[in-house]
Length: 310
Image 1 (tube, rainbow, N blue to C red):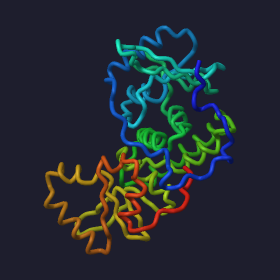
Image 2: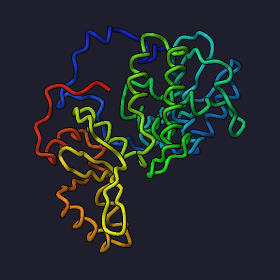
Image 3: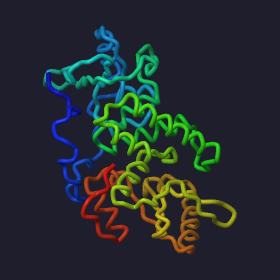
Image 4: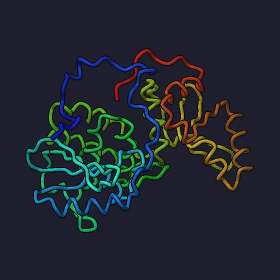
């Protein structure tokens, strides 16, 4: 059995803060090697053969909940509720030896953390969110965790006072669960990310941009920030208020798909007349390894020596 990467090998204090150029967590968008339907089929077979008390988490759970999943490794992630060595195997091998990785985890979650979807035991959304926040890669963690919180809150861009109160209640609840059920070694990571959760991120690309900008230490960054215009209100994908920079996270793709392109260009002229600058990021740019450097270039700012820890 191979030990899973979550097993600690060195203390977090021994690892220096990554620089912008050395950031290993920025990787291009993973390609879909296996059809999601094939993975779900093999997932049912794996769960049928498993006699222990288990639940699905991470990638297969995202498929069943219809959450963003194309930013995740295509694996069958099985969570055990009793002590077990972290391990991985492969199922569905073809003649070339390719197959789907089955990765097993142990969590000290209570029985009420599990529900059933399509006859499969699966983590409830609240506990699935915590499991995502445990991931080492902050992009994989927060892209789906933001989508889960958005689903729980039923978020809208207007962000009413009732929505803000509900969001705060969930964050307080997640902090309590973390302190009770997450091991002390990972608590600080999860608590730090809970404070960064944002249900206003409407797409995975917006979440990717937000994580990157916060790594660059822009703490005043806002998503779905309203800009009043004549007869309407424009909600930005992102806004750096001190720099007066509007960030559009899906860039040229959304502009080409917009049937009211002329109206949008007119709106952009109004925004620029108010002193704002608009920078855009396409999907390819969001998943590029050099995203941080690209953001700094578009902002005309030098990258920091060390990144903010997320």
